[in-house]
Length: 243
Ligand SMILES: Nc1ncnc2c1ncn2[C@@H]1O[C@H](COP(=O)(O)OP(=O)(O)OP(=O)(O)O)[C@@H](O)[C@H]1O
Image 1 (cartoon, rainbow, N blue to C red):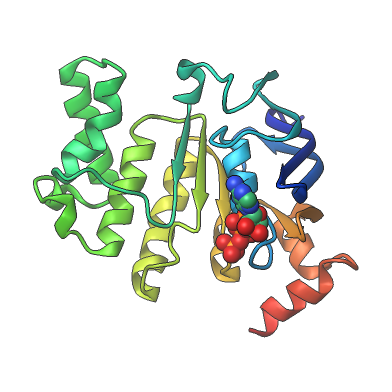
Image 2: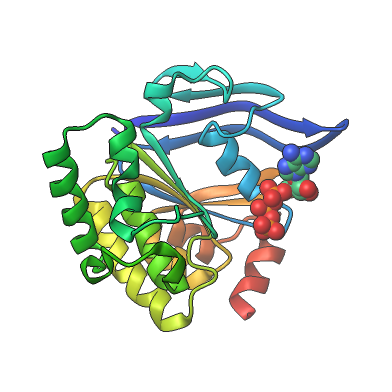
């Protein structure tokens, strides 16, 4: 049976008396890659911020490994088991290697292990040659590889990615996706991936959630959702296929 690592129940996100997100039930299974798609403003980024405990819900529960937390209550040690990569994650104004090792330093990992793990992940993401280059001078694709290495070096239990490839040119994106998928599989990292790109979604994700107007319109195996859209997701999904 699939093991749930994170679950959402009766989740509500409201600001200034307006409801932006309302998700009754959503489970994230261990080692799966869950995609989230939906129109602009549907609540995808909000959902990822809530699931990664960066933002507090108005009501409802989010449980990580069976225990409920909010952004305000989550202990630092638990927060550190979750990593987030955004479209434009900010890199520190230092070398690529130091960016990758920064999280390990904060966790007071011994220096020899930091060196070994940093070199390993630079290598895994094919950026060893950039180790001593200042992050300010990296291209968008190179910077996103550093961001992913910086997240994966922490061996997170869940990796949240919010449109991480949307600024990359097509060949860079394809190459990075092809590098990333086996890395996630080998490390059995659970991942949540927001994207507007059907090719990315088809290639990377096991299951797919479709958000429409702040509500979960459909969730299921990615191929099933795309081949058999539900009544309320049909309009959006058919439009995506046509594009
Ligand atoms: N802290 C906040 N205060 C007020 N409104 C917010 C807040 N966070 C999100 N929203 C609103 O929630 C709605 C959903 O935003 P969100 O960024 O989650 O959508 P999205 O599906 O990721 O959109 P896109 O595809 O355009 O990136 C938007 O109308 C946004 O303005």
